[in-house]
Length: 288
Ligand SMILES: [Fe+2]
Image 1 (cartoon, rainbow, N blue to C red):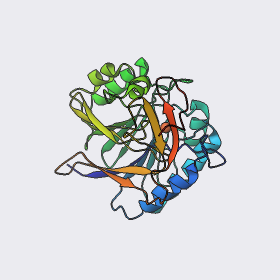
Image 2: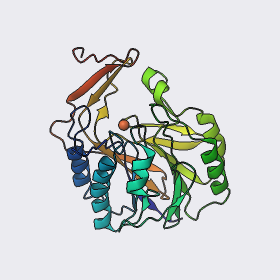
Image 3: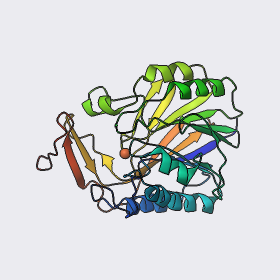
Image 4: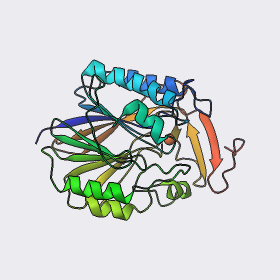
């Protein structure tokens, strides 16, 4: 079986100004991780799993497309995007189309229900799902998308498939915040994936690297670009800190799927951006 390497980014949270609502230099964070990923060899496709625009704007989407598109174009590889809870479908579609783009920006995707889409890169089938619920932080994959996905997976791809969506269908059991914001009804997705050629489910949203299994398929949550959620905080608190990350996903090799994490060389990495009580929603910036 052929091998493929995915550079998996998530949660750039850009706006037209380049800063997110917490005042973080989101454009700088994305630039930094793309610059520090410049020595990663043999990338076949770049994937960004949602929260493209912090404010849902077309300007935020365009700012991400400009940066990730330039990185992909230099390497001659396609680039693929999903929506996240911060995104809005209309501006997202206006900027990205199917969001499966060739190295030159040409739309390669075949669209499904909502903003779901599919394309193939050298025999690897890349399926993006839209888990966005407008106005909510948690995610849902619609019945229409699950039916569409079931139909796609009835025919295996030459090099297998990956499924990418923003909201993880897994959560850390001791984290009250993850249980509130993850993918709802993950059991229905698990049923569709069971026995399929899906090699990995790739997600974002938690701004933290987490892995688990769904129907025996590895689920990988890549670190956030704009901020990292620091899981050393007490479990009722959500602490966001600076420090962009990304994942290199290797598929089809002897240890497939393999995941390894890149951390941007940010001198301010670890600096606190916010500390929120997930049980009350209160900002507890004074409490460390
Ligand atoms: Fe996010």
